[in-house]
Length: 294
Ligand code: SF4
Image 1 (cartoon, helix red, strand yellow):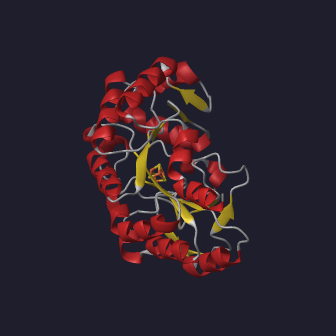
Image 2 (cartoon, rainbow, N blue to C red):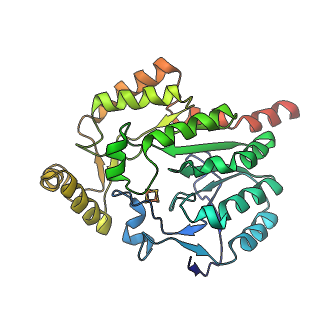
């Protein structure tokens, strides 16, 4: 693996912790090899050249330890928003595992975004962090169908493996659930698929599902996506242009109705779907602390 220079690893989240209650963000790798055709990290604003090639960050754990030790406050560290931290190279390099051990050592919580069941390797460390701090694992699942996930997320484990990962995490007491983002217009927005996904989430013990019923498209990421979706489903490019032109926010056409269906299915199985409720539910350690202070 190639390594790139990095000055910092962890950054403080500026706008509070409204997105999954995350206080800090870090990406231990640059680029991602899961090949999701819709990936927003391909947008030119992030300036990640040759995005599909994963690179490590030189001395990542040394830099991280310095940052964790000197920060005046602790909190929840989000890992993997821009590149999947459980990419295949993590098996060998164990940078994410090393970061989790440091997070534990310095008394922080953690929020992981991934599509890979490799996260199960680190259940032991997650359980240790969970004893004293807040832990949430968000696994992205965009379709209940393995064949479709293989088309739109070609190098990530199929959906069924991700559901199994959620089961194992929740069986081990880790607060885990699904990011149903993005929902691809005309592709993954079928009512029966949304219902099936919520049902499978329930079967796997998922604590939450969060969705915004749409996708975002901008600059070169739009071109990349439209070219690929048109190859998979001929005629789709024209359909997108007719419907969304050059828009950034591409909400699915029946979003209101579909969200109602989604909400009702979640309610039926007792699955959380509202961001505030998800944060409240997993930040149990904060509550424990407040109770003991009181
Ligand atoms: S796993 Fe995430 S970061 Fe990687 S290609 Fe897919 S959407 Fe992008």
